[in-house]
Image 1 (cartoon, rainbow, N blue to C red):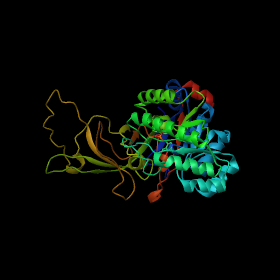
Image 2: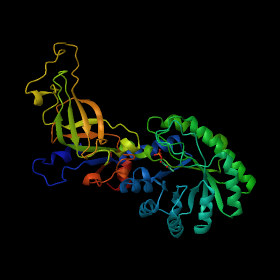
Image 3: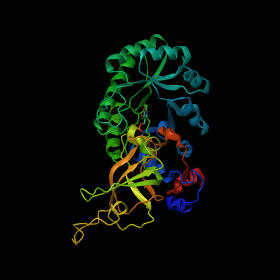
Length: 415
Ligand code: PLP
C-alpha cells in the first residue's frame, strides 16, 4: 500500500532529479514479531542486535525499546547505539581486532564488553583498556554458512588455553566465550558443536582461575530455519551451561531481513529480440543496483526477486520483440488451451557503467515493463543499504517509509 501511494505521487515525466530515486518501506511490526518469536523460542538468550546488518535509526530505536543490547563493530556503531539512550553495558564491542583509538573511545564511553581472539589484541587491550570485560571468541565450523567468518576470526581450541594463560598473566578480566557460526548458517549442528567447544573453554578458564559468567552465541540465525536452530541451541545451552550463566546472542539478519521492501524505477529498456531464434527478451535498467542497495547480491550472496509494482502497459503478457521487429513474434503455443501465460523475459541491470551491475540475469514477469514503471523487491533488510556505495554518483541515502503492521511496535515507537 505505502509503496503504491508513494509512486503514484511521482510524475516521472516532470519530476525533479532524484524524486524518482529508489526507496524503502520498512515494517517495524515485522521486526517486533521477530522479537516475540525469539522470546518464545530462545527465552534464555538475550539478543544484542548486530548493528552492522542494518543500522537504520528506527530499527535501533525499536531494539532499545524492546530491551535488547547492541553488537557494535566500530566507533560509529557504538555512537549509533548510545544515541538510542541505552546504558553502555548494553553494548558488546564484538570485533576481535580493534582499532586502538576506538578501544580508548570505548573506555571513555564505558563500553566494557568486547571480544578478542589473539595475543596481540590482549597486549593492545592491556595498554588501552585494561579493565575491559573480555570474551574469547573461538573458531567454529562455518562451512555451511552463506558468509563465512572463521577464516578471519576465532581462536582455535589449540590456542585457547595459551590465550587464557596470557590474559591471566596480564591481569586482564576475561568474563566469557563467544562464537559465530557464520552468517546465514545452514547446519544447526554447528551451534551444538560450538556450544560444546565453548563449554570446554569455560572449563579451561576455570583451571586458569577465571569464573566466566557469559556465553555469547553470536549471529547466524535465519528466518526459515529459526525454530529448528533455536531448539537445538536451547537444548545445548541448557545441557551444558547452568542457569546462572548468562547467554547472549548477536542476531542481525534474523531481525530485519523481511521487514524492508525496496522499490526502484525502470530508467531504461533495451529490446534484445533475436530474429534468428524468433525469441526475445528485454534488458531493463533500474536506478539502483549492486553498487547501491543491491550490494547484498555481491556481499551477501542473495538473489533478490523482482515483482511489478506499477506497469503502465498492464499485466497481459505480450510477446517481446514487438519494438525491435515492428510486429509481434508468432507464438507456437498460443492455441494451446492448457498453456499458462509465461509472461515476458527480462534481465535486470543497475544504473552504473559496470557489467557486474546485474540484479537478475533472467526473470519472467507478468507484464510488459517499460521506462517509468516501478519494480519492488521483498526481503531487502539485511546487508543492503549499509554496504551501498555512491559509485557513478548514484545516491546511497534512500528514503525509508516506516509503517507498522503490529500495534505493539506502533505503541513502542509512538506511531
Ligand atoms: N556478530 C558478528 C561478530 C558478525 O560478524 C555478524 C555478521 O557478520 C553478526 C553478529 C550478525 O550475523 P547475522 O546477521 O548472521 O545474525
